[in-house]
Length: 335
Ligand SMILES: Cc1cc2nc3c(=O)[nH]c(=O)nc-3n(C[C@H](O)[C@H](O)[C@H](O)COP(=O)(O)OP(=O)(O)OC[C@H]3O[C@@H](n4cnc5c(N)ncnc54)[C@H](O)[C@@H]3O)c2cc1C
Image (cartoon, rainbow, N blue to C red; front, top):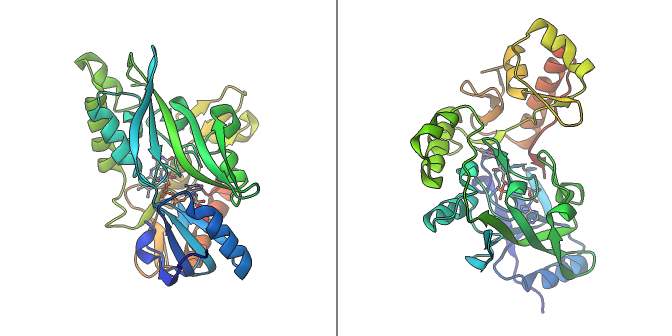
């Protein structure tokens, strides 16, 4: 049985950059059993399929000549509990921040540093979301994904996800898996993770998961432009991890430049700092620009399309490279 597809779907309100974007067809995935039929239908009609969650980490093309599958699988619950941890399972279409808040309300700590990250649960493993000294991998247990190659479901452990800084196996095989649900392992004995500027002050105040979550929300709200007001995709560039040789000119000129030594001997520089020191904070090019509030954020000032964002990103990369010899890489995915 084929599926009822929506025609000429307008996705302008389905991406946080508010780019003008349409898809020839669209479908809301409310049950995992729809997926085999979706891919059969697409193959029969010769149409490509792309997966969209909350649209908060994508730079959408103006026209996609295929099927955009909107992941709308719902449900979250505590599915198991052992001596050390509670296992929480959430369906891929759940809103990530709602899950964080819900776990805190259940008295479960572990996700609070990742509060207020936009998007869905299913996309969280794709780039191993991270913020305020934490990342998804810290509390990840396993996930279930639909494998387009085999037509079956597969369970992934953390090791199989190959999590790294803003990276996972799902980024490298973008057309293969659809994440259906994610399990998180939340510790029974909660130890706050306060190793981040703005959080360490909480150490003396007997913090709870809720107070840490509220502090993270306050910090994020004060620092990042609201995508509902100034459409954006959060951090637009990854913090570059470079060799010490590559970082040397930066650190020689600016000994206090933010840099974070990595276990492999390289160091992580701050992309936002490099962009700001390159004089690009607040820079505008056509309908897009670098936020005046945060140099890592690309903002759509109105009416932008994918090419405007790509052109600005190229300008930023060239400018930073000629100023500091450091190559930046985009964080959002061009779809
Ligand atoms: C204001 C703002 C702040 C942000 N802050 C942070 C931050 O602090 N840390 C951080 O890590 N990120 C941050 N982000 C980026 C973004 O929120 C995350 O990457 C988020 O996980 C994306 O979720 P989404 O549902 O919107 O994914 P989408 O943007 O819809 O999709 C992103 C990618 O994942 C794929 N995908 C989506 N769902 C699935 C699925 N179920 N199965 C397989 N593939 C899927 C898509 O095909 C696409 O390639 C921020 C974004 C914004 C706008």
